[in-house]
Image (cartoon, rainbow, N blue to C red):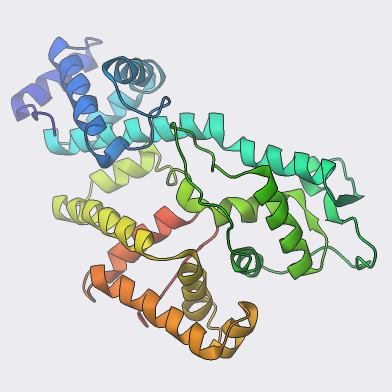
Length: 333
């Protein structure tokens, strides 16, 4: 962490900003804050070029000043915080949010576009083409494909079908990209397998949503916007420290869970499915399903005790979901 300003410095910067003056000491502090954040896990994976250097960091800080700080974030930070520590946390989170926004803007659409191209060029058939491209309905271009209504089940069930197909490639995010690294051949295999398992037509929106959920670990975590930061920072100091610790613990828990364990925990604890139902979904024995639930629970217990579970679990949901809960357990763990 960069050196925190004194309370006197903090107050002088706030008063100066109220008069339209940005003090050199404040500029230097924000530079040092960004450097410290880039040297830790706080901004890991968010550099546009894949690795933070003096040049890339300076570009990020310049964008931060232009797009956030001078556009109102700096004034809001002073209004919402009362001491240097809270002020520093507010700014660091805002910088992270800006970088996540930028990364998603440049990288997130690629997987959807690739899926759309594979659907158009592969062994798939467009069944209905409404005015909204996202609602275009697709199916398999094969004999015997059912003339049925589009899939209307819930997304967790669709996700479990996609998980059950497994992976024939090792996936990773590299070079600072916000998109998952996966070949067109593997994407095509997963698309075909999903249609075969669901045995219903799917819209492009349904397909791209469930694929993004499938590879959620390879995308940046959800954005926490500045107004949410303000609510968090304005709380008790100990509560904020606990939330930061919980986020680190949650990352370790999720890293320790396999994809299969994650989706089985979802089915067992959130959807209240029986072991027999889980076994049928994943084409395995009841004993195997039971073992996966037990092993997944053991991973959670390695890092989380009963007292810290609620706040850690909230952090796990924040890290592992984007509009839908990919993994959600209860006190049964």
